[in-house]
Image 1 (cartoon, rainbow, N blue to C red):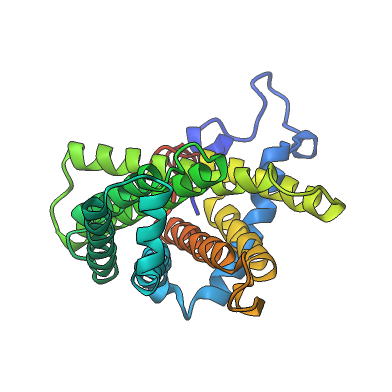
Image 2 (cartoon, rainbow, N blue to C red; image 1 turned 180 degrees about the vertical axis):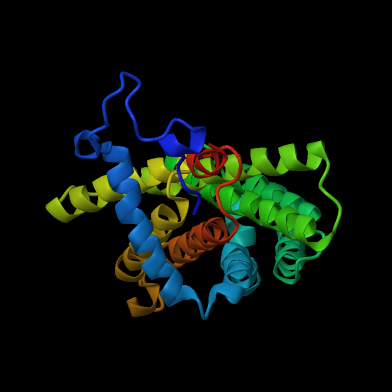
Length: 302
């Protein structure tokens, strides 16, 4: 952790500019410094506990990000006739086009997800999966569904974190310094990924019934979301969001407890895997860091 410069770092010493000694006890730390001190302690504890799995975090994050696409591809194949019926009867898409639409989506999701997991052609894989999100929103008529829109913004944020992670690894793999264009591209995508990741939580806050526990979780989560966006204590805040979303996912989207023909089973299953994807994006954020456009990085500079 970078050390803040004290007065002695500039050759001024501990004396007052007016000749008298400085009373160190009178110097009070700001609330931001107090928060930074406490979260630093928590981050140290998290580092000690996560040390055994730290080398595997990028692989786990990448798999979780694409798991919703893998599940979606399997669901389309196992419910092929139902999907065709919905697209034809309710979306009024011609028969031949419905077959082509589903086939292209399954191939794109399966192939691009595999490329993300094995870390090959990440740019093309992420572009293909973002294309799937957009085409499905148009094809299934969900583009104006606010909850769907916010969730998929977060999924796309996770995909952008895949890109930034791949560029970070490329930078470490070669001895030469990255070009200015590569550094700028990585910074902007890390910033966009951080901002988009938190939209799922915004959707969670403004949906459902309000209880005292929901209010507490929402307030804590919103603070963590702001910290993620501005890049302040990113490891702590992203880990906190991972814990909140994981507990919420297990308690609310427990589709395995529902009967096979329960009307909400597919919805709960879909939500469960989407939240897993966003958790994967947050894990990648924890591993790669917030990037240059963040308070954490500025603190290292100054």
